[in-house]
Length: 398
Image (cartoon, rainbow, N blue to C red; front, side):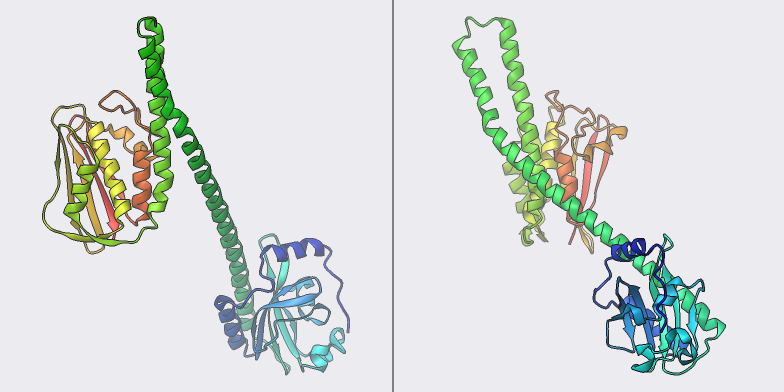
C-alpha cells in the first residue's frame, strides 16, 4: 500500500477544515439526502461526505455504512484531495498497486471508488463526496458530472453552515452587549435618581433662606439648575422606561375590556383642560395589558404635551381585523414636519420639536413605543399635518 504525501499546505488546510466546526457533529438531513441521492445516481451501495482531519476521516454523512470515521492512512480520499482530477476514480482497486494490502480491500471488500473533492472558496480541499462498491464499476459521463455538481452543493452547505454560525455568534454577542448595557443603564439611572431628587429641594431651600440677600443673577442660576435637573431627571426616567419595556413583553396575555383599558389610561394621566375621547362599545380583547398600556400612556401623554392650544382634544379608536388589533391615537396639536417624521421613532432623536412649555422631549418615549409595538408583532405609522395635529396608528398581532 502506498500512502500519498501530505499536501504542501496541510497546516493551512486543516485550519480550514476546523473553521467550519463540522467535525464530530451529528447527522443532518440535508447532507444525508445528498449521499442517498448520489448513491442512487451512481448505483452504488455506499456514499459518503467526508472531512479529512489530522489522522482520520470523519463522515459527515454515511449512506450504506454505520461507522462515522476511518483511519486517514488507508483512505482513498487521501488521493482525492491531492489529485488534479475533478473526480478521482479507481475502477478496480485490486489491480491498483497504490492500494495493495489496503485494509479496506482486504477486510471490507472495497473494489470501486470515485470521489469529488470538496473545495472551499479559498481553494482548500476539505474532504470528498465519494461512492464505494464491492465490485468493479465504470461511471458514465452523466454520473461523473452529477458527482461533481453534488460536491459543489455540499460545499455550499458548508459555507451556509459557517455563515449561520457566525451570524448566531454575532447575535449572541449583541444580545450580551445589550444585556450589559441595560444593566449598566439601570444601575446608573437608579443611582442618579436620588441625588437628582435632592437638587431642586436644596435649590428651593437656598432661595427661601436667602431671598432677601441673593442677587438677581444668582436666582437665575438657581432656576437654571432646577430646570437642568428636571431635564436630566426626564432623561433618566425615559431610559429606565425604555430598558424596562422589554420586561413588559414577558407578561402573559389576558382578556380585558377595551373600555376599561382606556378609562385606566385617563385616570393615570392628569389631562387638565383636555377632551379625551374613546370608544365606549363593550369589546373584549386578549392582549398583553402592561405593554399595551405603556404604549397608550406614551402616545396620549405626548398628544397632551405637544399641543399648544387651549382646547386640547385627544381621540383614541380601536378596531380589529382577522390577525391584528388596531389602535389609533389622534390629537389636534401642533403637528410634526414631514421631514422629521422618520426621526422621531429613533432613540434620542427629537427632531427639534418643542412641547407646550417650549422644551424639547428626550427622544425616548416614541422609541419605547416603537420597540414594544415591533416586539408584539405589529407596526406603528404616523400621519401628521402642521397646525392640524397627528394620528399615530399601531397594530398588535393577536
